[in-house]
Amino acid sequence: MSQKDYATHPAVAMEAKILDGLKEKTGRSLEEWVALILKSGPSGEKERQAWLKSEYQLGTNYAMWLAARAAGSPGGYDPDGLVEKMFAGKKAGLRPLYDRLLHLGYSLGPDVTATPCSTMVPLRRKFVFAHIKPTTNTRIDLGLALGALPGEGRLLETGGYAKKDRITHRIGLVSLDEIDNELIHWLRRAYDETPAA
Image 1 (cartoon, rainbow, N blue to C red):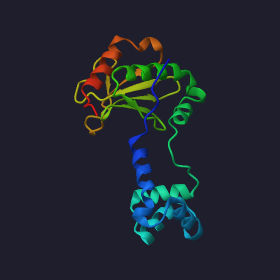
Image 2 (tube, one colour):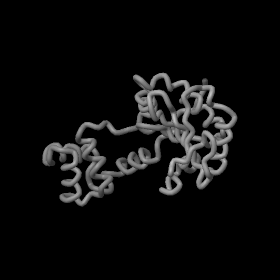
Image 3 (cartoon, helix red, strand yellow):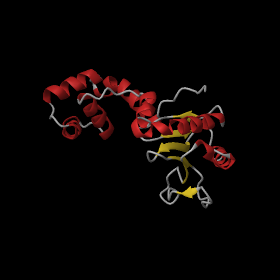
Image 4 (tube, helix red, strand yellow):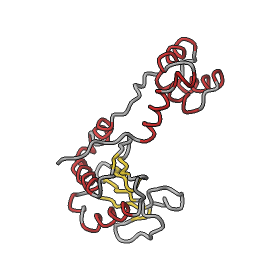
């Protein structure tokens, strides 16, 4: 099956852009900050974050990213690695379901992107319209952005609408046979009701 490459998650793209301009904004490059933290900062990651905020007046995100790098986090974004890890071990049997749902998502339009996280794969236009999540070792949930629509049949409300979450409904799947016209209808509706980029 041919599929598009994964897109970079917006939060990761924002972090990369900010870290690229770090020297201009703070007077130190990423490497210089890491060297300073390792030489003069406290040992724990949380302590380093607090130290960077109090000693250098860095914002929360800067302090978090720099402390993580000093702790050895390589940074960057490996979407394929995230998906492989998500479907490893006892969840490996869910991979065919995931692949089929991803293919369906991409088939909705050329503007669809997938941006894997550690526990799910959001499908986006301008905003997330669905996500694919291996919820248990034997079930994937297809989360859908359907607003205030009442749940019916297999389409269950998540409580997300009341919490102002994008994902408001889900359909649980345990086999490829459950990817049917009803599921495709709800996925298409979530796509259609989400603004284009």
